Each structure stands twice: as structure tokens, then as C-alpha cells.
Image 1 (spheres, rainbow, N blue to C red):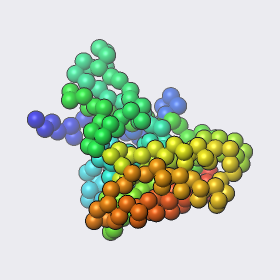
Image 2 (cartoon, rainbow, N blue to C red):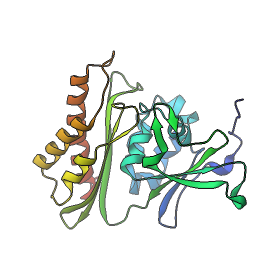
Image 3 (cartoon, one colour):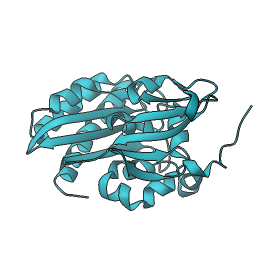
Amino acid sequence: HLVDINGLSDLNYIREQDGYLCIGAMTRESDLEISELIAEKYPILKDTSEVIADPLVRNLATVGGNIAHGDPANDHPATMVALNAEIVVNGPAGLLNGGKRTIPIDEFFVGPLMTALAENEILTEIRVPSSNGKSGASYIKLERKVGDYAIAGAAATLHFDGDVCSKAGIALTNVGSTPVRATQSQDALVGTTISQEDAEKAGELAAAASQPVGDHRGSEEYKRAVVKVLTTRAILKAKSRAGGEK
């Protein structure tokens, strides 16, 4: 059976609470585009929503739906992996009887179009650790035409202690059976000042971590080359934002 949850208006919100940015599952993509909080502190989410489909779709499509679908070609999954998000789900037992649980993002996507959601659960909230201190993030994708699924995409998040990167997150869109966390790529950035050379090295490592399949959007070799370039650009954009650029 298909259950319409559009009536759950209580799940449409964007707010900071208890150290997290909390996004209700029914929040529309267009809400992310116009949110002052998102634009000011979490522009990577604006990056992401702006490249999903077209304005008509973004007025109807929800952030929760983009994630719960489990499609590695969707844009929010990689962004949320890079941001180390948590996924809140609810089942029939309800909030007071243990029906609510929180799933780390790295455990949520288990295969193509498959997630850790049980058949009797729904995704209710996405939680992103609050953006504090010197940090920046960016999402970039390449598409054949505006609104298309990505040939590939790259999300980068950076945290700094002074001028040195103290933590990084790199994740990729549509180059694996799930969003790909490029662990070696993100680890290579820690302890560096994120020079052009550092970013390019991380881009190479991200390309090596990708697992693309050749199709009408391009060959495996081409997609890996795209990943290298996009990851490098996303990292440098994230660094610029950490320095105050919007």
C-alpha cells in the first residue's frame, strides 16, 4: 500500500536545536533554497537543493524523500554523508514506546535503492551537526542538462584549527551502489592547509575510491576523471567558504 504523508505538516521545519541543524522529513527542496539559516550557515544544502530537477519538482519534492529513496544518483545522500548526518526514523510503537531510533548516515544506505528503514518505519528527521568554528562545505555535480541526474557529484566539508584542516568529509554521487565516502581522500586533507596541490591529491584519491559503471552518461574512465575534478573544486570552494566567502 502507498500511504500519503503530505498531511504531516509537523514534519516541515528547518531549525537548530541541541547542537544540530534539524530538518523535518517533509521539508520541501524549495524551502532549503530560500532559508536564511541554510544560506548563512549551511550553504552546501542550498548548493544541493538548487541542482535537483526543476523548480516545479523542488516545490513538491521533500528532503526526506530524496534520502529515503536510497538512490545513489540522488544528490542529498552524498551531501549528508559528507556532513556526518544522522537519520531519525519512527515506527508504529511511537515515540513513547521505543518506536523512534537514530541511524548514523554511514549505516543508512545499504545498497542501490535500499536503506536501513524497516517496512513499518518512516524517516521523520535529518540531523546535521551544527556548523561551529571555522568551517566550510560545498556540493558540485556535473549533469548532461539542467535538472538531470548527476554524471557524478562531489560533496566536501572542511573544519579548521587556524589555517590547518582538522576534519574533513568527502562523499560522491552516482559512482557506486550507494553514496561513496572517500575515506582516504578526506583523511589526506587533515593536517594540511588545503593548498591547490592538497586538493588535487584528494581529488585523485576520491576518483580511486569511486566505483562508477559505464552507461549513456559516460565510461568508467570518464566518470573517474569527472570525480577528480569535481572533488578538487568542491574542496577549494569549501575552503573559500571557511574563509568567509558565501
